[in-house]
Amino acid sequence: MLGIIINPKAGKKAMRAQRIYLWKLLRKRHQPFTYRVTKYANHALELARELVEKGYDEILVLGGDGTLSEAINGIMRANITPQQRQKITFGLMPRGTGNDFARFFGLDKRFKRSLQLFFEGKREPIDVGCLTYWRNGVEHHRYFINSVGFGIDSLTNVYGQKLKYYIGSHHVNYLFGLFGALVALKLEKMHLFVDGKSMVNSKMFHLNIANGPYNGGGIKQNADADPRDGLLHGMYVEKPTLRQLVIGIGDLFNGKLYKLPFVHPFSGKDFAIETREYTQFEADGITMDIMGRFEVHCLHHALCMTMPQYCEEGKEIHDFAK
Image (tube, rainbow, N blue to C red; front, side):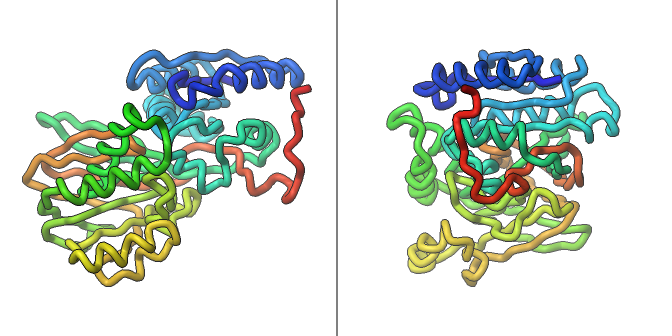
């Protein structure tokens, strides 16, 4: 059964045309479905959990990275068995500002292509990241499909989101946000462990742990990250000099950041981070805060997704709802 979650605020100018096209397509395919529209923050989480617990095993999200992340959290928190969860397939019709997770699979705002790939692509297992933290002795979990970021990463996200209210939703928001974050950032001391081994214990300019290679509107931060390989890839960055920053900006989008001398890549399955200060972070573009020890784990093949690369290469994307 197919459940559809729609964020009407994401890419709202094209919403009506896209929704009409989707309804026509579903009628043509004689596809039974139900849909829900988000009305407030974290509503997609509630809706996805409700749909999954009612037996819907296909979830299509019309929204951006944040809406998708909320839906993934709803699926992962649903009261179902791990075996049932592994059979759930999700898909995405990108409508947000960054669309970074979708970018890895070649999905963009060409909504007809995204829908074709959802219905005709091959179903494959995919990894999900889980961040575990404690407040007042109570254990909490935040799941992520793309990445979690600290330091300059988190602050860039804050400024990039604010810019949407002034200049609209554009991927360059995050580039402008980066410049603002460089001025305002205060370094925090963190102790990072990777698969049980101490990696670094110092003030951190930037730390990112990722399931996918892109974030911040197309910045190719972790070029080797693949959300199917059972690993999370990341990097921590020492405080660079002004000259190093200028040089590094040229490598933001080409996947060569790891070659810079102040950038240190790593990969693994389990991570722990210790901090004595209030720490802000972003998970799939959603800003949160944390203090104390927290852990990040890779949940291998937790869900399924239809994979675009298995569709015929070079196949024309036609208006197949007619």
